[in-house]
Length: 266
Image (cartoon, rainbow, N blue to C red):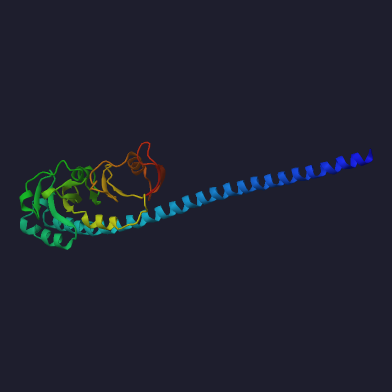
């Protein structure tokens, strides 16, 4: 009898050992799985963090480049506005505005420079045949009439002579009493900037956008055609309209039912 009990006990010992080993292995697998999941989560979060930082830095750099390009136009427009206000404004004689041609030659990417009076009529221009035409309906002209600020205004793209897309830039002209007297407008040819934006590496599925405050595309690269003037994706337009300060980040599809993108804007 004692021998039988001994044999039964000896038989159960390997079974208990096997169960313990299996439990230990199972525990190791669970631990490894949890560690792997935690590592993957951390890597995912780290990738998002690095992606956000890279996108934000790129938006900053491109924004500064665009600002520097526009600063040259802004400086020229400010000088012309001061010149025009000293010499009598939009209705000053043509000789007073002969400087327009020289200023145009000094601005790379400038298609034309024009002067409009308080009614929106072109009184002087480097393109003689457009003198007398009205620009009253331009977004730019309407912005000029809305306040006393002389900030640089960027208009919506339009097609000029020969079908070329142009972006008007303008500044307000003030009368001696400070009231609105008209404005100076430069038609900017965007190919110079577009060539630069094409050279920027935004990754395999990345996109670079420059939007107008009215929700229109000024630049989008890479692009098969020329999307200038097309409506911006709703998500970008909403983010642009709600932007405060220097910019922000958006994690959302750009089109309904489309893939989610990480977008930095400035």
